[in-house]
Amino acid sequence: MLWEERIIKKEITDLLLAWCDALADLQLDDPGRPVFDGGVLCPACGRIHGRCHEAAYPLLCAAELTGQEKYLRAAEKAFAWGENLLCDDGSMYNDPNSDWNGTTVFGAIALHDALYYHGGLLAAAKKTAWEARLRKMGEWLSIHLTSERSAHLNYYAANACAMALLGRYFGEQKYLALAGELAGHCLSCVTENGLLCGEGGKADARTPKGCAAVDAGGYNAEETLPSLARYALTVGDAAALAKIKELYFTHLSWMLPDGAWDNSVGSRSFKWTWWGSRTTDGCTDALFRLGKDDPVFAEAAWRNFAQLKACTHGGLLYGGPDYHRRGEPPCVHHTFSHAKALAGALDGGLYCFPRVPLPSDRPAPLTEYPELATCRLAMGDWRADITANDLPVRKGARASGGVISLLWHKDCGPVVACSMAEEGMAEPLNQQLSITKEGLRSVCPRIEATLQGKRWAQYFDLGATMQAKETENAVAVHVDAFLCDEAHRHLEAAGGCTLQYKLTKDVFVIEGRVSPGLAAHARYVLPVIAEQAKVEVKKGSFAKDEPAEIFSLIPGFLCREYVIVPDRTGRFALRIGVNKMEADALY
Image (cartoon, rainbow, N blue to C red; front, side):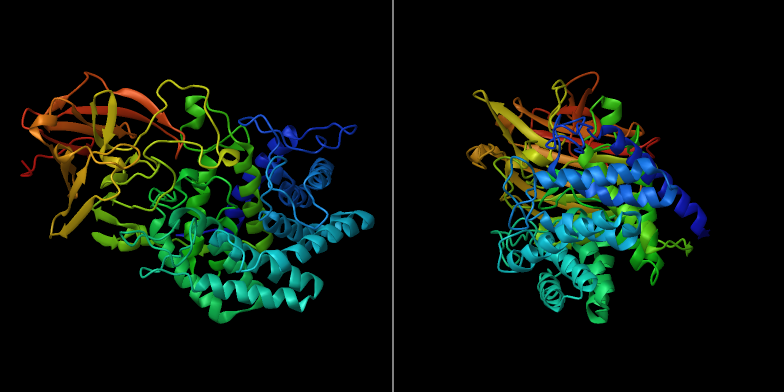
């Protein structure tokens, strides 16, 4: 099957215009007060996000596509509002109440793209003003955002892109030289399994288990690799481009067959959405550009686009598949960030491409990632991640202990999806809160117990160990863990527990054990997303007749919370199937 260019272009154009219409509707019109005039008010956060001036690029693209004056006016007002955050040194604050200025780089890229692709729409004086700001930002970036500055890896990659683009636009050789230096630095930050590291910690830093700061299905896929790809394409760095394609192909194993990004074990998974990461630009633009040489990248872009479209309601991109159904408002940051990638895909040139499989369509039954202390399982239509990652995020946040961080089935999509043990505001300016607190709690499967008024849980154990084994018809993972408090302290000797996961082509089996002395206090909690997924208890019993409905903002799913009580010996066993579960010899 061949996807036609006209279909792809219409679909992407329609979504971009829907997003731009919503952005224009949320844009404040208050000429007497420049601090508000042109800002975009967020329905979820009740404020203006500082980076909303970057919407000038997709709005200008919409103006070019339609010839409608309203988009041009909205783009010019967004640019003008940016003066509120532009400092005298050329940097831009991330937000009015945040002194972080590394995001200057994303503003510069968006401003460049607006000028490079659509600058002809601007009156001469305005174009000169836009170019003056871009030059000022570029000078600051060339001095202050180098590999010597402490930052997440995506900033180095973004500045490689920015310096390449601005170097070409202004004919500035020092920018081009820095672009190559930064790109080389990023391409040296690679783990043994071909994953970029340095997102949330130093690239060479390792935890006691050897885990690295890898955000495979988040910032790596949606910010760092897209930036590096644009760098290489802009300057014609063939060697770098070959390496980037290799790395991006490896990272495509973290895209599920439905186009969602699996970032359940990422170093910045607290910003995970099912379609990507909350404040990244997204992968659409870069993957379509790379897809001109290899259709697997275009295939990935198109499948991910379907997730963006599915999570859009009323012209705004919601933070997860069930946000709208739950009644949660959308944070506008998702829309104006990812609108840039849709505009980039249109400006970069779309094309026909043949349908091809993604790496996740034909995965190995067992893949182990020591740098993530994670096992990835695949049998039939099932995909699963089991993780004991000990990379710290913040107190109590890391889901570890040998938990299921992801369970997915071809016929029903996500069955389990979690990123954090206990949700919290790791980045308060880049996450949203819910005022509906009922049912808002962790959706991470775990063994837990309450003793002396204190909760102890398996997912707090950073020292848990796992052993994986592959046979002809199944993949199994054995976990030894302790129940711990949120400070990762063990519940004495009696707090030990074990879990055995077994995946066949038909079912996912979970067997667990706690000490007999804990049996009366312990529970296995299993939040399940898909309605088609059926949970059957084979040992132990359900604590309630009906599961409770719960919700997690990350990555944004409503779940049925099953609670299983161990038997008197401390053992429990259950299995998860989709629709009718076939009889088998597992028990």
